[in-house]
Figure: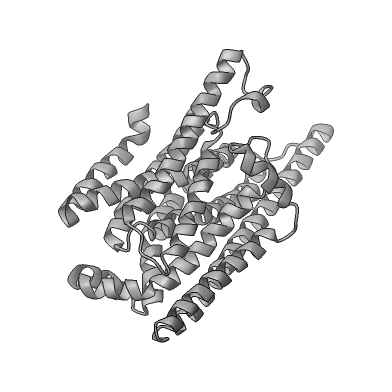
Length: 380
């Protein structure tokens, strides 16, 4: 069963890693491996959320999501989107961007280096908003309680995450402007680029979040309406077709899942820019990771859930926060690719280990994972 579900993912992994070695040697192999683990880890909560919604859909819409939806997710968001980002920021065509990465790698690297402040500002702000909105939310399960409890109380202040993000963006832009002035002002327009790109990242996050909220509310309305129709049918004895019951609601579920998947994809794609600027390596790593997300979604739908590892979602969001900070730092300073890549992996591995410890402690107490959460040690 495991091989049947993850078979394609294993095959794509083998092909992708071999292609990485052929393309750039063992260093490229390491970068692709890190990107794959990072994408899988950051998208773990995506698979869990997808599986929870997918269970409510009929077989037809499940098949649509796992075929057309996966094509959009893998080829649209993970492969095409990075190329579009480079093309826009470097002011070249998408085809030219890909061609330059193969035919003139030095010229391509120069263009991407020039465009990096805009990419880092846009991505840093988007990822920072994801992290802040998560950390400011009051949750029943907390991992690093000494941090999360006080921040959850602060989160009751409206628009706090937006305000903090804008302050961080202003500090980043002012730092760039100050350094440019000290070095003769040769890159004075860099501060303006950082500011505009950062605001664009913030707006993108708000739009994606708004669309997700819109489709979620539509989904809830359709489910409520169908529930009322079922109740009415039970009272009157009137028959209603199963197709009618799963039509609009399933369609809104599909749209909601696509927007949700796109929003989850942003963190992996943008975080990849903190590891490498190479389009080829990015496409290989993210493509491998996306295949595992698809397989994991199918596995969760067919076999159950991996919600037992309750701190993984926390670890993924802390990794997102770390990537956001590292991206903003790289606007002005250079950071080794392995540091940025391994930072997220270490945080997620730590959260997984904490989840295992929690489960063992609950098992030793004879608990079922609910009643004694407060007493179970967290990640510290």
